[in-house]
Length: 279
Image (tube, rainbow, N blue to C red):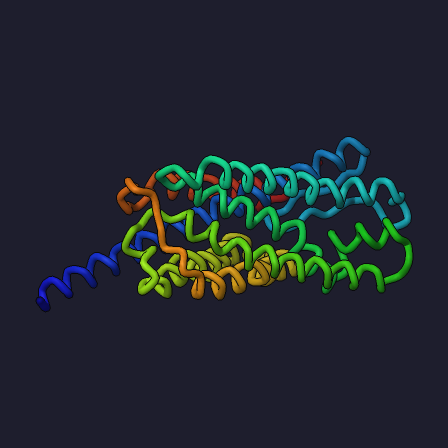
């Protein structure tokens, strides 16, 4: 009896580790993809408007003075990134809900984290950037031209929306995992630690190391505002009785392919942007 219990515990621990590993790799990969898309769209828009600058490891700086900006340019340059991420996030969420959640494999987890990162780069960024009064904060500032009051109010609304989305994303999180063992309600704490907390904490630390010493305050706040999604998602997941998975779920195994892709992308990010990419 004790041998069977030990084997069951060992199997659960192995699946927990694999889930944490895969989730963290996917967290990093989707973050870099979404952040890269956000910043690439910003650079492209700035180039179209004839605004020079430099793309750094953790930020983009522009080479024109404050007086040289005009209203349409501010809204276009600082708004294109969130707009692109909003579209990508919605498409990922729809793909996940309509098709991927009913399929085996890690695609549904990739789509889930893509949607979550996209949401954070739209709503969470507005919250975080309001604290440092730049980037997304410029959008309502130049849109309303009514002082800081509307900016703060909009940031509060964004925070509340992020909390609500995180709460309702709990079922999607549970459906993104194939492990029959970890999906059991009795093993829910392990699933939450492996599938939510580990990717957020470890992923943020790895990204900090990748961007250091150029880590911007904006990006640091974005790491923190991710909690507005993940904390309510974790709390709701802990109470959600849903514990079903696919009838023929895929065996839990390490995804070395995604790890290699994430490492290559991270290395390319550092090598290309460390000296500063001028545009």
